[in-house]
Length: 219
Picture (tube, rainbow, N blue to C red):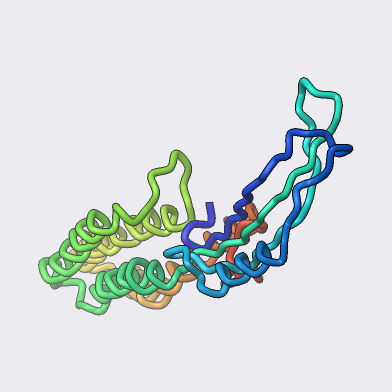
């Protein structure tokens, strides 16, 4: 749910199906050495290995009375999110800033304003088709899914504002027109950035154990 700002815990369990009285699985110094080496090489593409450990646990088979020994290798992984910040989220923000720049065009220039906003909306749609393969196909919405949905909404709003301000201009409702222009310039882009942070904060607090170090302070 915190994708792409998530961390995951992966466990490999080696179960000894003999009872504990028959002995336990042994872990040698080589086990720890190879695990440390694997962690330092960081050899999982797209992930940082935050922690790696080996420990013993017990396992009870439902059809056997005696418990067995389990040797567990546990990896704590954190997704490398630089790609998603610089090549997905940041370009979307830039497209939206260009889209909202239409609020600085005088209201009577409806055609110019709509040209900017519609081109930006189409650019956002085209860009999302390009990055679609980088986003997991899940039945629930992740952090980046919410950000993209919010971006569509904020890309559509300047179109509506352009038509609305043009109608105010034609109706000569100057005071109302000035207020709409002022609020859209002052609160439009900044409200988008605040809502993006709010979305991240909500998802972090829903799943604090799976939030990366970059955003875990929000929980």
